[in-house]
Length: 494
Ligand code: NAD
Image (cartoon, rainbow, N blue to C red; front, side, top):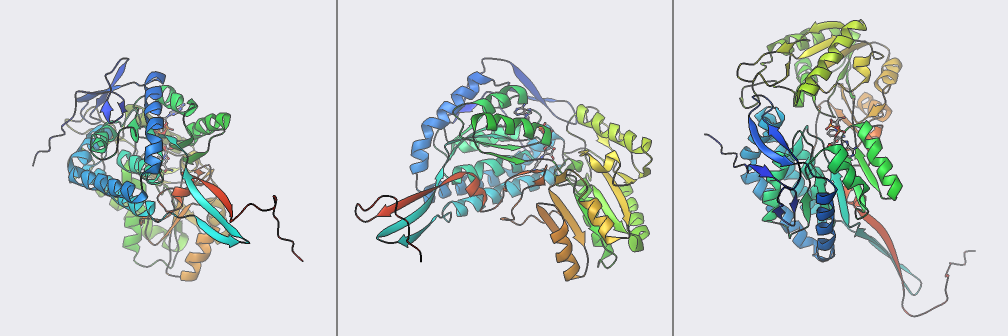
């Protein structure tokens, strides 16, 4: 079946539920594999950001007063609309970003679940109250107002849902900037949003980071910033928030350990997990399990199976459902990944498989890299820095304390995986790992509601869970006396 992408020729800023005429420059959105021109996208700047923030500010009073049940109903309608458009949005992301259509379909499944999860959360997000002498103490949650949100290119469907769903569920309005490498599915989501939310509740300003992104983070009308991307830009966004003293939540990079213990059951499943952890998203995932610590006793078995598995992966076009691994998002990303591979070799890591570029006929614009495995040490650059490509470092271990120190021995702390048949070992090791998410015996096990956020330089705050609504609300206390009494009441104590 052929899917009609139904794209507009060009996309301006989406403000008040309409695409605005483009007054300034544009940039082209190209098919990452073939280079085919898909659409032109506005390079928004302070003029468009001003208009979007004004629309979001105007929509805020009515939106915060909208009953949570009604906000929830709209989120459910958005989930249904995304579900009806899932194949189209998945194909669009596969072409725009270059990831396999099988994976991008999963992205939108995650997104649908997010809209539904936060529909439920909207009506169950409660404050509390307790009686005090002659009255009540009430703690209530209030939305901030206009939220400025910035997302990266790697999983655009998931990222848009992670940002929009909790913000609007909590009664905020939104101005969101998608990434310049992956704007189209978010702009197409805007068309679905226009049928669901009142004008101004969700506004989208595509453009470059240093233009639209910088204008959004500096805007005096923005009451809360939420950012997902690299730790480097996270610092810039955090500094912009600090200048204006607005809260900033950050979801940043990762270099996650994945640990195989000698008592792990089902070694074939462990190997599948290790491969998926490294290759999902073509390795362009903040959560990628890029450092595989394998115990000496099972090292040869695991590594032999892993290498054989990597060699079997079919590298091909993103749009082919039989493709195992497709191309990277851009030429810049391709160069960066090959640069890390060179660095691994020059620092003395042993290349076990892969390491080169792959040409895919008809997709010469794409940047396809062989699934790559190094035998490495944890102090090597390839084991310390986020590569964002299908490159796995395998690290041999035999001493538990040394392995734990190395697993924690990076600046990041986003996720970790471990495989063992001992419950006690699993739980004790989970306690020792400096990571926001620990997966025992199954990587990427993201059940809805699992708090998702980083330790150390991987971020501040948690998304994907009920507590996310706390990040999008002030906590206000209201103290009630039944009649005017003495000021400054304090219990006397003993
Ligand atoms: P990036 O930091 O380069 O860009 C992210 C976003 O920030 C883009 O929209 C970009 O336009 C914008 N931006 C860039 N400069 C800006 C500035 N000066 N002011 C405001 N905005 C600016 O990251 P990327 O390369 O697009 O994405 C990859 C990174 O994102 C990786 O480090 C990855 O680990 C991280 N990531 C983290 C998570 C998570 O949830 N922790 C999820 C996905 C990606």
